[in-house]
View (tube, helix red, strand yellow):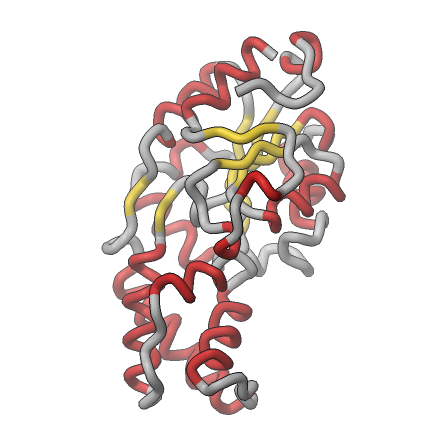
Length: 234
């Protein structure tokens, strides 16, 4: 992979990388399926297919729950009472199984280690609640690579708004133009473009069920292990 419009001098300017979690570092679809199935069962609602869940992942757990409830209720929006019940049960079940049905993608550990070896500071920025993200990263041995871990409630707005990226750059002490965003979806790309961060997308993530190369990005990789090499060579 080579970053679009990148030169060797530009490549060496990178000081940090911001890395997404679901669909980028860890395949968490199994966790979503189990937690949602248990939640729906308690609410006496129909189950939902895995391929439908994939299209709903990425915009935060609140959006996911509302989308699931709308789908299983034939397009009817959930009122506050139903949403609050669903949220309570979802959080309960997700925390109980967090990481048990999830797998780290091949190349992630090697990629993070290589980025750190190049001197880049790393932060994880996800729309997933911090209470889910931190235990998951710890369980998979990935937390040690990151100076900061920011979940969906860490800032006033979530990706695709640029605010979380700008605030993460502030925490890292780096300029957006020198901070690479690595993600798996249009949410990450839109946020990066608006924040002024270069963006690389992995080919294997969720992206709301759409082909990743439809998304405007500076590069695409099949493994996180490819990213450090591209930065080192431009």
